[in-house]
Image 1 (cartoon, helix red, strand yellow):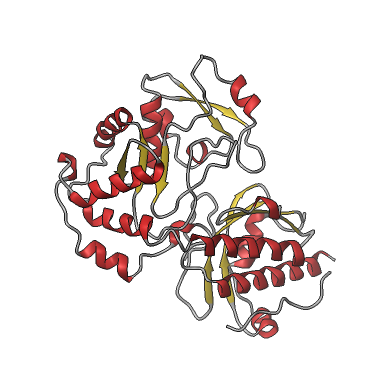
Image 2: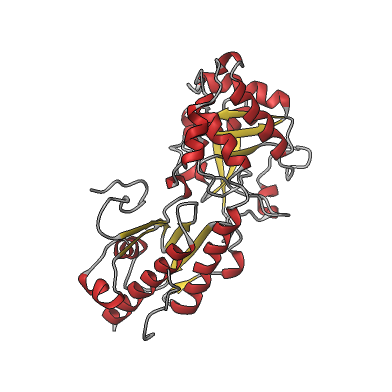
Length: 349
């Protein structure tokens, strides 16, 4: 059992697949690491939304949406891009574009977002059947297993043909490895919206599907203005999220091993996955304790801190950094984790 606590530098419930307690107002500091989708637009973004030039985007006449799509296509290195209301819609549109005929099979990872969290929309709405391939620990595929599940010849199946940026949160493809869908994963701060990138003919088909799925939003420039801020002004600060996530991972390695296990070398972005190795605490129990404040904590640490985490599955937890989580928050969250681990170890002995 470790003694002492990490020294810091100066300075109602809603459930979604086990997402834990929501962030509520109260006397204690709340550090929300459940997802980068909880980040909030700042003053500059709100001002841009309020003054945005708009038009009817269904007719292709919204200048702000058109500018966002043009700049996003450049960012992707794609021929064209399309602004959609949500990442789930963007994923479904992409699946329907690639799997145009009903009954088509789609290879997905057993931990893929579209397989677990998106309510089976590919099957229910598009009539696409999923062939599940096991994800590796870092979320990628074994290429040999992936290729063994491809039933028909297709030129170079490893080439990225479609991309999706979530403007509230975005994901990344690792070099030489294949993810279920190529994403960039960072906290970009927009309140709503995602962008699909692809070839021109692909995007032309996607426009029609967006309309079918109810995604024609008319004067959508009010939302697209926030997206423009995200992909221009918010990108440079992403390294702060990456650094804070790595700091937290290193702290787990130093102060919470072997109760918690983390592979520091795999922490490359703002997403951190770590494992609870104790039989005395489930992922849900650990999240509950991290999200509560006791009198003992206040007496021992001098303050109360609620840290909200996301239990993925089994004993695996997720923590995600974004623009509303500072370096000080990261150290406070790490100190709270050390406090919770110490108390659980004491109870187990």
